[in-house]
Image (cartoon, rainbow, N blue to C red; front, side):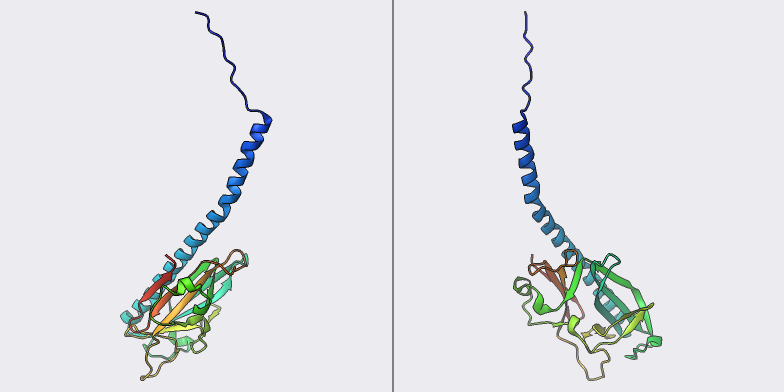
Length: 220
Protein backbone atom coordinates (compact mmCIF):
# COMPACT_ATOMS: atom_id res chain seq x y z
CA UNK A 1 0.00 0.00 0.00
CA UNK A 2 1.28 3.38 -0.92
CA UNK A 3 0.72 6.17 1.61
CA UNK A 4 1.08 9.85 1.06
CA UNK A 5 2.87 12.05 3.55
CA UNK A 6 0.65 14.77 4.86
CA UNK A 7 2.41 18.01 5.57
CA UNK A 8 1.57 19.53 8.96
CA UNK A 9 -0.24 22.83 8.70
CA UNK A 10 1.80 25.69 10.20
CA UNK A 11 0.43 28.80 11.87
CA UNK A 12 0.36 31.95 9.84
CA UNK A 13 1.93 35.14 11.17
CA UNK A 14 -1.52 36.65 11.72
CA UNK A 15 -2.64 33.67 13.79
CA UNK A 16 0.51 33.84 15.94
CA UNK A 17 -0.02 37.55 16.54
CA UNK A 18 -3.62 36.90 17.59
CA UNK A 19 -2.55 34.20 20.07
CA UNK A 20 0.18 36.44 21.51
CA UNK A 21 -2.30 39.30 21.82
CA UNK A 22 -4.75 37.11 23.74
CA UNK A 23 -1.97 35.94 26.09
CA UNK A 24 -0.88 39.52 26.77
CA UNK A 25 -4.49 40.58 27.44
CA UNK A 26 -5.02 37.73 29.89
CA UNK A 27 -1.78 38.60 31.69
CA UNK A 28 -2.80 42.25 32.02
CA UNK A 29 -6.22 41.29 33.37
CA UNK A 30 -4.66 38.87 35.85
CA UNK A 31 -2.24 41.37 37.43
CA UNK A 32 -4.84 43.22 39.56
CA UNK A 33 -6.23 39.92 40.78
CA UNK A 34 -2.78 38.66 41.78
CA UNK A 35 -2.00 41.98 43.48
CA UNK A 36 -5.26 41.81 45.39
CA UNK A 37 -4.56 38.26 46.55
CA UNK A 38 -0.99 39.16 47.56
CA UNK A 39 -2.24 42.21 49.45
CA UNK A 40 -4.88 40.21 51.27
CA UNK A 41 -2.31 37.60 52.32
CA UNK A 42 0.01 40.38 53.53
CA UNK A 43 -2.72 41.92 55.69
CA UNK A 44 -3.76 38.56 57.12
CA UNK A 45 -0.15 37.63 57.90
CA UNK A 46 0.42 41.04 59.49
CA UNK A 47 -2.53 40.93 61.89
CA UNK A 48 -1.79 37.35 62.93
CA UNK A 49 1.77 38.35 63.80
CA UNK A 50 0.47 41.34 65.78
CA UNK A 51 -1.99 39.09 67.59
CA UNK A 52 0.81 36.69 68.56
CA UNK A 53 2.98 39.57 69.80
CA UNK A 54 0.14 40.93 71.93
CA UNK A 55 -0.50 37.48 73.40
CA UNK A 56 3.20 37.18 74.25
CA UNK A 57 3.18 40.55 76.04
CA UNK A 58 0.03 39.72 78.01
CA UNK A 59 1.36 36.29 79.03
CA UNK A 60 4.66 37.84 80.13
CA UNK A 61 2.83 40.37 82.31
CA UNK A 62 0.91 37.59 84.05
CA UNK A 63 3.83 35.16 84.40
CA UNK A 64 6.23 37.85 85.65
CA UNK A 65 3.52 39.46 87.80
CA UNK A 66 4.74 42.73 86.39
CA UNK A 67 3.72 45.54 84.09
CA UNK A 68 4.48 45.15 80.38
CA UNK A 69 4.22 47.84 77.72
CA UNK A 70 3.83 47.44 73.96
CA UNK A 71 4.76 50.34 71.72
CA UNK A 72 3.45 50.54 68.15
CA UNK A 73 4.81 52.95 65.57
CA UNK A 74 5.17 53.64 61.86
CA UNK A 75 8.64 53.45 60.39
CA UNK A 76 10.36 52.80 57.06
CA UNK A 77 12.77 50.10 55.95
CA UNK A 78 16.05 50.77 54.18
CA UNK A 79 14.20 50.87 50.86
CA UNK A 80 11.77 53.45 52.30
CA UNK A 81 9.05 50.82 52.34
CA UNK A 82 6.51 51.60 55.09
CA UNK A 83 6.50 49.22 58.03
CA UNK A 84 4.77 48.90 61.37
CA UNK A 85 7.09 48.20 64.31
CA UNK A 86 6.06 46.78 67.69
CA UNK A 87 8.36 46.61 70.72
CA UNK A 88 7.68 45.29 74.22
CA UNK A 89 9.32 46.01 77.54
CA UNK A 90 8.66 44.90 81.12
CA UNK A 91 9.11 46.43 84.54
CA UNK A 92 12.00 44.75 86.35
CA UNK A 93 10.67 45.33 89.86
CA UNK A 94 7.02 44.66 88.96
CA UNK A 95 5.89 48.22 89.57
CA UNK A 96 4.67 50.92 87.19
CA UNK A 97 8.08 52.58 87.41
CA UNK A 98 8.93 52.97 83.71
CA UNK A 99 12.28 54.72 83.82
CA UNK A 100 14.67 53.08 81.37
CA UNK A 101 16.87 51.51 84.06
CA UNK A 102 13.86 49.62 85.43
CA UNK A 103 12.83 48.23 82.05
CA UNK A 104 13.89 45.07 80.27
CA UNK A 105 13.02 43.96 76.74
CA UNK A 106 10.97 40.77 76.46
CA UNK A 107 11.38 40.21 72.70
CA UNK A 108 13.05 41.72 69.64
CA UNK A 109 10.88 44.31 67.87
CA UNK A 110 8.31 42.93 65.43
CA UNK A 111 8.55 44.54 61.98
CA UNK A 112 5.70 44.22 59.50
CA UNK A 113 6.73 45.50 56.08
CA UNK A 114 4.30 46.99 53.59
CA UNK A 115 1.82 48.07 56.25
CA UNK A 116 1.00 51.36 57.99
CA UNK A 117 -0.47 51.93 61.43
CA UNK A 118 -3.71 53.88 61.38
CA UNK A 119 -6.70 54.58 63.62
CA UNK A 120 -10.00 52.74 63.83
CA UNK A 121 -11.92 55.48 62.04
CA UNK A 122 -9.69 55.18 58.96
CA UNK A 123 -10.62 51.52 58.40
CA UNK A 124 -13.23 50.60 55.82
CA UNK A 125 -16.79 50.61 57.19
CA UNK A 126 -17.05 46.99 56.07
CA UNK A 127 -14.05 46.08 58.23
CA UNK A 128 -15.38 48.02 61.22
CA UNK A 129 -18.73 46.24 60.92
CA UNK A 130 -17.12 42.94 61.97
CA UNK A 131 -16.61 44.35 65.47
CA UNK A 132 -19.91 44.92 67.23
CA UNK A 133 -18.81 45.79 70.76
CA UNK A 134 -18.68 49.57 70.45
CA UNK A 135 -15.85 51.71 69.07
CA UNK A 136 -12.33 50.76 70.22
CA UNK A 137 -9.75 53.34 71.26
CA UNK A 138 -6.76 53.44 68.91
CA UNK A 139 -3.21 52.99 70.15
CA UNK A 140 -2.07 55.07 67.16
CA UNK A 141 -3.53 58.23 68.72
CA UNK A 142 -2.49 57.49 72.29
CA UNK A 143 -0.35 60.25 73.80
CA UNK A 144 -0.65 59.08 77.39
CA UNK A 145 1.67 56.09 77.20
CA UNK A 146 5.33 55.76 78.13
CA UNK A 147 8.56 56.19 76.19
CA UNK A 148 11.43 53.71 76.19
CA UNK A 149 14.36 52.55 74.06
CA UNK A 150 15.24 49.27 72.41
CA UNK A 151 18.92 49.71 71.76
CA UNK A 152 19.19 53.19 70.32
CA UNK A 153 15.67 53.22 68.85
CA UNK A 154 13.08 55.23 70.80
CA UNK A 155 9.48 54.05 71.17
CA UNK A 156 6.31 55.63 72.57
CA UNK A 157 4.18 57.29 73.71
CA UNK A 158 1.75 55.26 71.56
CA UNK A 159 1.81 52.32 73.96
CA UNK A 160 -0.47 49.72 75.52
CA UNK A 161 -0.04 48.73 79.19
CA UNK A 162 -0.64 45.19 80.47
CA UNK A 163 -1.11 44.76 84.20
CA UNK A 164 -0.03 41.72 86.28
CA UNK A 165 -3.67 40.61 86.04
CA UNK A 166 -3.50 40.63 82.24
CA UNK A 167 -5.72 43.68 81.83
CA UNK A 168 -4.94 46.20 79.09
CA UNK A 169 -5.12 49.98 79.10
CA UNK A 170 -3.81 53.00 77.21
CA UNK A 171 -2.72 54.83 80.38
CA UNK A 172 1.04 54.46 80.61
CA UNK A 173 1.45 54.79 84.38
CA UNK A 174 -1.78 53.56 85.99
CA UNK A 175 -2.62 54.22 89.62
CA UNK A 176 -4.27 51.80 92.00
CA UNK A 177 -7.74 53.07 91.13
CA UNK A 178 -7.31 53.28 87.34
CA UNK A 179 -9.29 50.74 85.37
CA UNK A 180 -8.65 49.05 82.05
CA UNK A 181 -9.57 50.48 78.63
CA UNK A 182 -12.63 48.61 77.35
CA UNK A 183 -11.27 47.89 73.86
CA UNK A 184 -8.00 48.94 72.20
CA UNK A 185 -7.30 48.62 68.49
CA UNK A 186 -4.09 48.22 66.53
CA UNK A 187 -5.32 49.04 63.02
CA UNK A 188 -3.29 48.32 59.88
CA UNK A 189 -3.61 49.28 56.22
CA UNK A 190 -1.84 47.83 53.20
CA UNK A 191 0.73 50.00 51.41
CA UNK A 192 1.87 49.57 47.81
CA UNK A 193 5.34 51.03 47.70
CA UNK A 194 5.02 54.29 49.58
CA UNK A 195 1.36 54.76 48.60
CA UNK A 196 -1.69 53.84 50.68
CA UNK A 197 -4.72 53.96 48.41
CA UNK A 198 -8.22 54.84 49.58
CA UNK A 199 -9.39 51.26 48.98
CA UNK A 200 -6.33 49.57 50.50
CA UNK A 201 -6.87 46.28 52.31
CA UNK A 202 -7.04 46.72 56.07
CA UNK A 203 -7.58 44.87 59.32
CA UNK A 204 -7.19 45.35 63.06
CA UNK A 205 -6.33 43.55 66.25
CA UNK A 206 -8.75 44.60 68.99
CA UNK A 207 -7.65 43.92 72.57
CA UNK A 208 -10.29 43.24 75.22
CA UNK A 209 -9.14 45.43 78.09
CA UNK A 210 -10.70 43.23 80.78
CA UNK A 211 -8.80 40.11 79.75
CA UNK A 212 -6.02 41.38 77.47
CA UNK A 213 -7.10 38.91 74.80
CA UNK A 214 -6.57 40.06 71.18
CA UNK A 215 -9.23 39.56 68.50
CA UNK A 216 -8.56 39.83 64.76
CA UNK A 217 -11.04 42.01 62.88
CA UNK A 218 -10.95 41.82 59.08
CA UNK A 219 -13.12 41.30 56.05
CA UNK A 220 -13.69 37.57 55.75
